[in-house]
Length: 532
Image 1: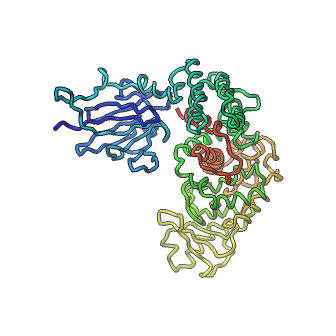
Image 2: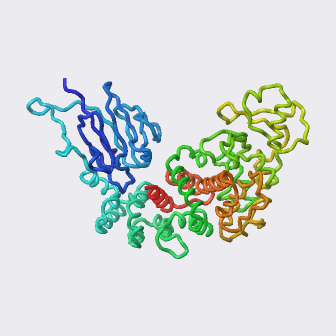
Image 3: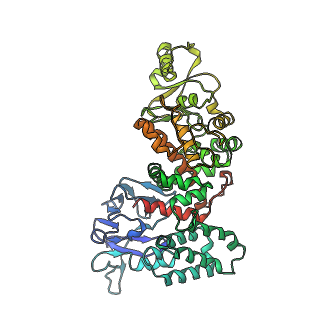
């Protein structure tokens, strides 16, 4: 009986091209022709050596990213959502994997018996003579058919031919093909105005009726800055968040911008951890968002609400572990925004003191020991405690830690009270040591101040009327890291999560004003390109 042979086959949406059979122990994919069995275009964001498939004696396989920065997503045959893998992972024939993003080129692993030819001999498809399968050939032709040709060619004639056929058939108006269209024109946008001219071509057809009118505004994404021109991460951020400060903040503050870009990339790549935000219409996030809109106004709420959009869904979150606060130590965060006790004190949020302790301390009957832990958080020895006042809670914490806290009302858990307190401390009418509404960095400075409130020393004297990261240079390294990184993280969530909803075609009216599909598609690609 002939030995079964291994093939890799692209998914139908990428043309269905079948590669193989492969007779070696390993199959390698990447952009370097000298190192790989299947060569993928570098313009897709593929590493020189991206992924390898190792054939096991028992008929199973190992899929392993070859380089630390090579992103690989696993698609199981049972239909489970794609999962990012960072270590060698066991798979079976029928499973698949995609490279760069979950929506990137997807290959399925096939194990087939060779077909018999007319003479009874095995009739197998052989690889090219050089034993390399190059996507510059047949697969690229399939990609051109699907609108990805501009990753591999700059011929303007090919672009117009493809665009014309997609408009004629109407397929260009599905979200999937609009995003692919963005992938096709981004290189042209980067080269100049030709991309926008090409994009506008699809709107000249009079056969799409009202759909064209609805999509005309998307053309603005090709020149989202004040002066027009090519789109940038800054200009698209400004367009999505609807405030002129964002392009200025990102362009004049490279420290903040670098952190923001990294967080955007991480959120787009780990979208599964944020799906709860736009799929759950009743959550701590939406409760806080609704209250904030009344107390802080739409511009601040559009960003600040995402302090409650933590990765991974935890129902009725009341406590969480902050792994590194402004001192670089672990501490407790309370409420949907995971606010520390020290933040509460500096922002005038009514809160009861708490302390992160080992589970053994929390379970002990040593009142003096537990009281000492809470007093350390308070920075005071003046208050006396009764044993029944001290409670312990471990929900949402890991590693054997628990939060000790005193019984009593705590505004960190109450969305209405919390929103009011934040409005008083950081609302648009507040201008003490932060920019007035509408001035440069006026929202960024408020985010930074929110997290800077965790500082033990220096918070009251911190002047954020200039560039926030420069102002934080006067603080300690852990203080700057905590305030700036968290501010960048929240900003990235406020931009990426609504885009994830758009790209997933999930109705998410509860998130507020939605970005356009074109803005999100181009932003996603610019962020991926920035990491190359």
